[in-house]
Figure 1 (cartoon, rainbow, N blue to C red):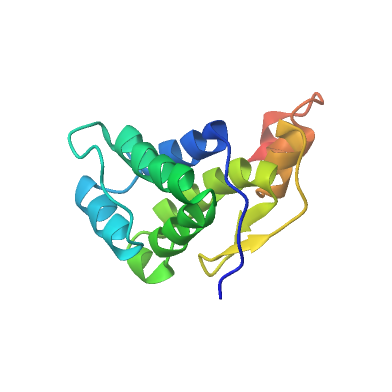
Figure 2: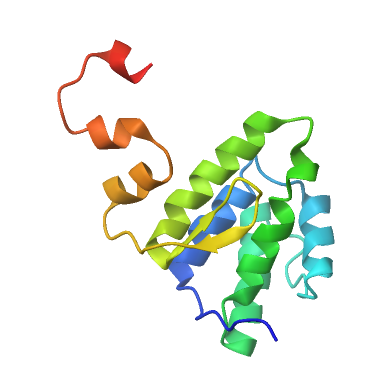
Length: 149
């Protein structure tokens, strides 16, 4: 039996959906439809913009079952490295952005695209640092731009 994951807040869910369905680097509408089918979540708003469509589907599943497992299942499938074999840059961007969001919920996306457990971040700087963003750790200090490149 799968481990029960506490429901994600609407803010966390929306932030994750905005990354996953980003206009430029996010999943296509067809990909969202297929992944929702794979995790057996109803696509309740197929006519809406992508992030709202994904949010509504996952929020309905969260509200119905009172668990957060559906978001994790969706991310695990969406971040499967085989789906990104021809575009490592998009994989890295999605992973970094999701890791900032998930850092506030005790999770992170590993190198293999699977979601794992981590200590909860309480600040944006801590979340960005844990997501592998060195500029976050140096960001509040006066640092020459070449150091960050």
